[in-house]
Amino acid sequence: MIYIKSEEEINLLRESSLLVGKTLAEVAKLISPGVKTITLDKVAEEFIRDHGAVPGFKGYNGFPFSLCISVNENVVHGFPSEKVLKEGDIVSVDCGVLKNGFYGDSAYTFAVGEIKDEVRNLMDRTKESLYIGIEMATDGNRVGDIGYAIQNHVEQFGYAVVRDLVGHGLGKNLHEKPEVPNYGKRGSGPKLKEGMVLAIEPMINLGTRKVIQEKDGWTIRTADRLPSAHYEHDVVIRKGRAEILSTFEFIEEVLNNNK
Ligand code: MG
Ligand code: MG
Image (tube, rainbow, N blue to C red; front, side, top):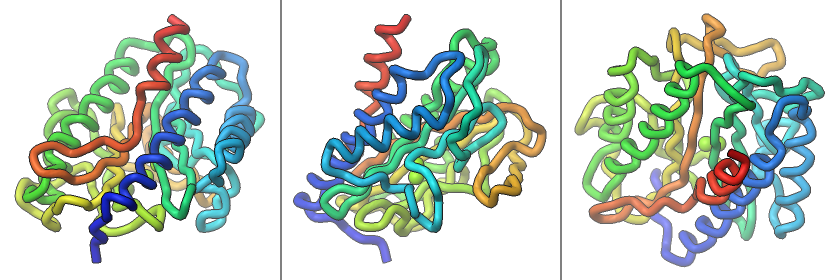
């Protein structure tokens, strides 16, 4: 079943989602050539705990870290490690928190120093597709309307939508019903109702849509090793226009100050 959240529950989800946005901004401050990705994980975990929450991913199905850090051809679920970021990399940082019994879950893809134009375009258009998907996340529409809008936007540029992984409902559980694919047919899938909370998260590849799982049992990478971008927002279904609970505002403030 798909839970409809009360306004009280939505307030708590907003608080958790906001904390994720602030945590990602702390990570944004550190992203530069030479930084170890494990350092980002430590800073995020400390920030989350300092704000009365616990990392939402750590221990989830046995995931060992607070952040999923996925560099270049890694799509999602990458492990933070001693590996350093280098000029020209892109890095998807996915963060979850659990506070007051509710999860927040949001992701952003960062450029490390100067990156190639074709990769910058992939990032920009993936982020655009997230907002285009969110525009369809309104009361009375269907889940397939979101996926259709995302797919339709990115495929015009020759990109491919990852199909093996999808967005999801969000609440007292990190992953609730419904599944929210980033591809689909208009008018298909479960009907959206005011008070449903969804994590919408396009994962878009420069090359093939095919992905494989690495031997660590978690990391998902593109089969052709071309880069992938990933952005994620938590939204409440409303009449007319969805309400976005998570935010990139703090992240983008940091990125603009670093320019
Ligand atoms: Mg996420
Ligand atoms: Mg998610």
